[in-house]
Image 1: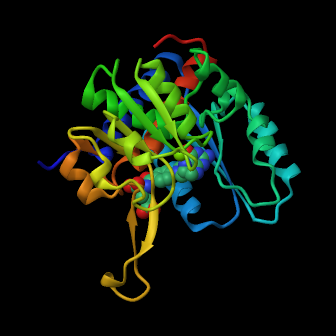
Image 2 (image 1 turned 120 degrees about the vertical axis):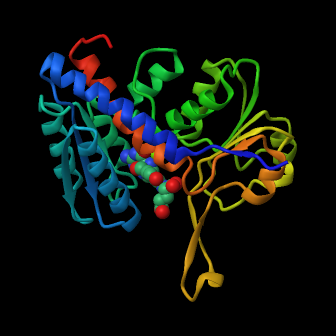
Image 3 (image 1 turned 30 degrees about the vertical axis):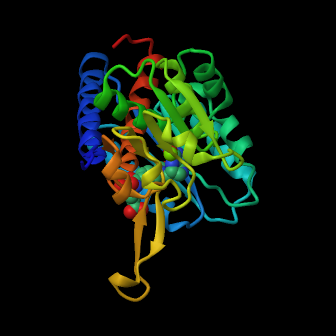
Length: 294
Ligand SMILES: Nc1nc2c(c(=O)[nH]1)N[C@@H](CN(C=O)c1ccc(C(=O)N[C@@H](CCC(=O)O)C(=O)O)cc1)CN2
Ligand SMILES: [Mg+2]
C-alpha cells in the first residue's frame, strides 16, 4: 500500500498561522513586537534563498525582521561585534547566523557568542545542554519541526523504536534527544554503524539526516513505519534537460512509500517546517524574555 504523505508545507502554514496569532496578542496585550535578526556571511545561493524566505515570513507573521549581510571575506571579529550588538538590542528577541559560514570563520565561536536566550536556532551549548537534561531551552528548528510532524501524525510516541540516521549537532543529536524525551527507544546510526539496513528495518520511526542522496533504501523500511526525511540533495536530472537538477531526500522515496505507513516528501516536508519553527522559537523567546506566560 502507498504511504500517507505528511504535508510539511501545509503543516508549516498552520504553525505560522498560530505564530501570527501569538504575535498579534503580544502586540495588543503587552505592546511588544517580537524581533528576529538574521545574519548571513557570503554568497552561497541556497543560503541566500533560505534567508530571504526567513525575512519574508518574519514580516508575514507580523514580527520585525532585521537582516544583515556580509561579504564572504569579512573578518570573524566583525560578525562577533554584530552579534554582541544584537545581544544588547532590546528590539531583538531572536538572533540567527545562517550556516554554513565561510571556512575562515570559527562557527562554534560565533554560535557561542549569541546570548542563549536569543539563540532561536537552539545551537548554543547552553540550549543543547538544556535539551539533553530535560530543561527549558530553545530547540533546534529542524528537529523541532520533525518532532511536531511525528506527534501530529502518530500522537503518543512512547515505546516506539526510533532510529536517527546522522549524528550532527544541529539535527541528529537533538532529534535523538527529543525522541528519547518522548519515551521512544532510540538508536543513533552513523557512517560506522554495522548493518544499517538491519537497524533501519527494526524501526517504527526513521529520521534520515545523513545528507547523502537516497542512501536509505526503500526495502529497508519496516511495514507501516513513519519516515521523516531531513535530506535536501540536489542531483543532476538530464531527463529534465541539459544542466537541470532535481531535489531528492536521504531516503529512496518511491520504494520507501510502498512499505512506510507515512512519509515526508522532498521538497515540501521537513524544509518548510524549519522556518516555521524558527518563527515559533522567536515567539517563545519573546515570551520568556518578558516573563509572560502563554
Ligand atoms: N542558522 C541555520 N542555518 C541552517 C539551518 C538552520 O536551521 N539554521 N538549516 C539549513 C538551511 N535551512 C534553514 O536555514 C533550510 C533548508 C531548507 C528549507 C526548505 O524549505 N527547503 C525546501 C526546498 C528548497 C529548495 O528548493 O532548495 C523544501 O524542503 O521543501 C528551509 C530552510 C542549513 N543552515
Ligand atoms: Mg536546519
